[in-house]
Length: 308
Image (cartoon, rainbow, N blue to C red; front, side, top):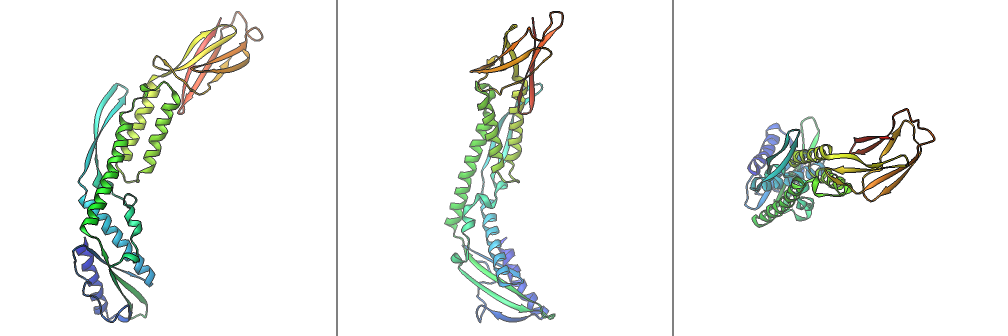
């Protein structure tokens, strides 16, 4: 890629000469020897713009692109993420490959933010005038990138990728059944979404995060259920359960009834107690009922009990 951009640099000068564009100003009397060449541990680029600042900014952008490309071509790591995918027919194990070389973005290489004129090795610019009297600038830039610095950037990038992959595997291995507290389940789901949001749009791990989120949601939908613990004409006690476990910190459910009046709610550690007045609104010859509805992640988990 560096050879290509150097060729483009030389080509721009040639095109200007062939087209008869006149050089009206330059940063020095003679063009540097390195223009159009290739040098070890240096990046050589050029860019054109309507103003000197525009051309200069484009040149530094190309330097950053080359550094990004250089890191991506040297990254060798690939990781397999093991997933326990929940389906309607049970749980199946699958594996997803994460190729770190395909996930390289500018955000992963903080050093790119430090690329600036302060550290440039050399530069040369030319102001040219076309036959139609319009003018433009060509900015040539030589920027240092030692082999040791490049190795350090690759090492830092791969270290960061390992941290991300390790975090992703923790999310993939998590099982909702390990919790006795609904708030911990929902916190895990929220943390996964935050982790996904921190990844670049092109990062292949985002798709894996979506699969894991669906797994969490399926685990909840298949195992959560509201249970009546006890009920009589004075009160009904209910709990939100995961399998056989009563969960702490479940949301306060809403209620529906055909006759009960004066319903009050008391939150207990792993249950909710509803008290009411049966005699004021209920009749012996009718089916008198109380429905309790929990809502978790937009899904409803109801239970209906008949008061006798």
